[in-house]
Image 1 (cartoon, helix red, strand yellow):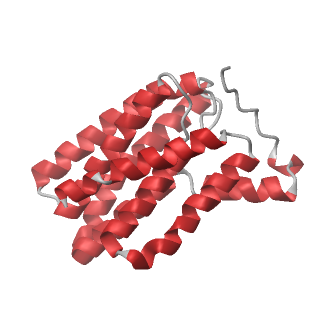
Image 2 (cartoon, rainbow, N blue to C red):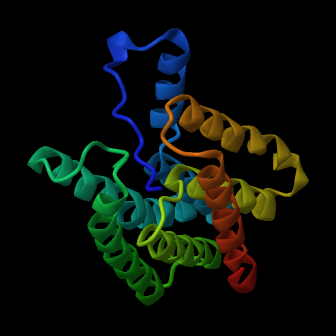
Length: 204
């Protein structure tokens, strides 16, 4: 049976629980986590210089993909910023892939710090993997990015970042409350994101 997430109610019509889930789901949206992680890892690797590299990477990995989706929503080609209909995800994900590859190429040519470059490679691996799965099945992109984010934080900062797992738990809770995904789709997204993030180890 094909999974069809229901259209979310207007925010004003949501229950308090749904409103909280909407805030978490929107606040911890994939692009937001991608940008925050790039800035954090950039700063960790080379302070203010690294932060500037993180900003450059965030442009291609977060800002441009959000622009692609926003444009699609305004044209009526996409349901919403989270693109709840699986078949609508293919084109924006493919275009985002082009943006990430362009950003990765630029980072290599300009001599970006190793941690920033390795992180973007890991993000590229996660995006390609998610796109391949999305062709046939609706995986949770929220959880793919959340799982990858937690794994990267652990790899960069060590066990002290274990509480970051609460971020992934909060995202999973929000997506379940909003009935955006099944538990299997959330689990698959988490595993895919966390596994893809291990690419960071190979290049770091």
